[in-house]
Amino acid sequence: MDRDRSKDASEGIAPMGIQALNDTVLSNQPESRYECPVCLNWLRDPVITTCGHKFCKSCITSWLQNSGHCPIDNINLSMKVDIFPDNYTKREIQEQRMNCPFSTKGCTVKVTPLDLDAHIASCEYNRPETSTQPEIRVPCSFQAVGCKETFDSQEDMNHHAETDVQKHMSLLMNAYSEMKINNDMSNASIDAKEQEAMTLWEAPDKDGNQAAAPPLNNTSALIRALYERVVVLEQRNREQDIVIANMSKQLSAFAVAKMKQNNDMFLRYCMGNYVWRIDNFKARLDAMLRDHYKMLYSPGFYTSPNGYRFCVRLNISPQNPHCFALHVHLMKTENDDCLDWPFNGRISFAMINQYNPELTQKDTMMSNSSLIAFRKPTAEICVRGFGYTEYAVVSDVIRNGFVKDDVLIFRVGIRCV
Amino acid sequence: MANIAAKRIKREFKEVMKSEEVAGGSIKLELINDSWTELQGEIAGPPDTPYEGGTFLLEIKVPETYPFNPPKIRFMTKIWHPNVSSVTGAICLDILKDQWAAALTLRTVLLSIQALLSAAEPNDPQDAVVAKQYREDIRLFNLTASHWTNVYAGGPTVIWEFNQKVQVLIDMGIDEDQARVALSTFEWEIERATEHLFS
Image 1 (tube, each protein chain N blue to C red):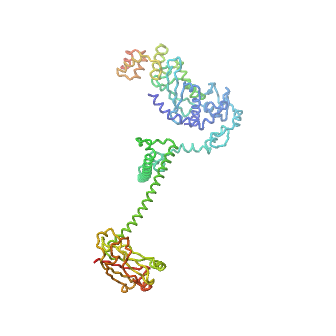
Image 2 (tube, rainbow over the protein chains, first blue to last red):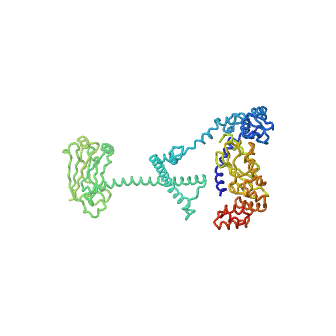
Image 3 (cartoon, chains in turn yellow, brown):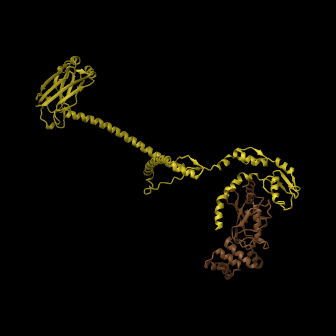
């Protein structure tokens, strides 16, 4: 029982003691001829006895206060008559020079053996040992989350832990949220990458074994795995770029289709009342004046959703280059077979005067069922139109306020009868 | 602790650690605290003695006045020896008392104690009962010392007869150590031992 207990105790302490020994004390081991048998240190003020033994003066003095014998051979000694200064040994010791034990740390001091202990105590390279040992401070138990306080004793630390709860809570909170963010980020990215890497890279050769990710036991394996993930991600990135490009194309196609549909809707449901806005009129007019075969056609509009479809044509009159010609043309629709032919109805033109509505030029005509223009169209647009070959004088249109902001507006009304 | 004592113990400790005896497993020295005032010695039972094969622990206390006064040393392992108390472990050895010399060291003291196990001094006893047995019945003394070495110090010699007698007293409700001391004292006669214990 005793043996066990003492073994435990000694195992804990002995290594530390040996370490301390090796560091300083034993670096200064004297040769036996210069060693005092009492203090086992270098002879300080050596004396020699009549029996031929050397001691430090103070050591033999202390010894002989309680004993009348030599510490070595028990011969009777008297302080007064048997002790002599040994100046020969003293001089030999004085001539010795020893390196500071901290020379490995950079101390270049060389001193006599007797001065070595004093030097070690004050050696500037001795700081770590002397400063760390007395100052074993207790760190705050919340050190890991960032509390930098240290304390002289465990009690002080406990007191600090009790009083600074608020501070520690907030430190913990910060640490927790950081950890959470890191976790979330790494989880999300690693999961995605791993799964992708597995499906793209590993699935072909290990079908049933996807769950067992290869253990990354060295750096090169880790780099390889990361590289593979990069490749996977780049691949996916490219695929997604393509998808995005396709989608934006589709989107613009949709937008165009939508606009077209809106227009078609408007044209189909205008019930024969169509307002034709000709923008950039000046430029179009110039083009027509240069080339008399150039004609402006309106989009086709319907007299009713499933009714006749007409478009309007404006061009420079072939007979009179100073005049506009204005006609309507029947256009093919999907319902042509269901309609009555030839078309019968009233057609009215109004060229809007945008400055003075009273000057708007209005004309109304009745269809003529004998004309080819009102028969069921055989081409997309019936080649024959119906209207005025000399509708208005070009210069009047320009001068009299029909064009505003480079826009000319016609209102066309076609009603079946 | 006086500076000179601590310094000397440190040097001695190193001396012991480097010594041949430690290398040979004959003696050992360990620190108990870091102020160098308490150590634990260990000596091997010397060959050709009843202590052979046993390991004996020693408590060493270093006084402040060391080395001008001797260290205080006692056996922590129970031992049957004329110069050691079978109850307290106190050692009767002149160099630990009036013959102490400042030039002696822990190493030399441990070796002296080891030598004491080889050469008992029955005329200057610590334990009179043991010394008497040593003088009057050296055969029984050797058997008893072997038995104690086996039981307390891990020695190899098992003496069944003694173990059984101790067990008889234990079965009677007597403490094992007390039973062994009583039987060792009364020449392993159960009647006398029990008579002594229950009187």
